[in-house]
Length: 223
Image (spheres, helix red, strand yellow):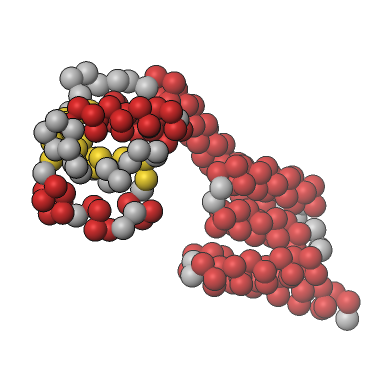
């Protein structure tokens, strides 16, 4: 069956196929040269993108294109032929304003989220520092950590999520909920080792030391 090759695709009479779907010998330029190129068509990427999309989605269009190309060269090469499409720089660049707006919104959203995370980290650290002596401050620090956790999930960064959960564990220690904090720290340390994140591992060790200290003080107070 006659085929038209352009860049990484071959056009036959029914559809546009990817190279992996066709015998690699069909993609060999030397093989095509033996069949003789009718000509090299120079097109820009915008045209080729639209053309290849229509070839893929419309069987009627692909049949019409294949038939037209073969008929136009049949008087020169009545058997098999190859037509190669070569990409060239377009005369005018097309600015995708819709996509630009989407990306701009995502960048602004990310910027606001990171800024909010920085503010919450500063505020949470202040309340956490007073949480050892004032229970109310420990509760507020825990609530701030939950807000940070929500933003971390939105950012989609697992290690940042883990650090926020570690802040929650610290708040639990200050509130005397040692068992819950212990389980949380252990899980986070396993995660840190899996990710090979030395910083998170050290943070877990630091909070674990805090847990051990509070636990030992609690045992002494009961004696």
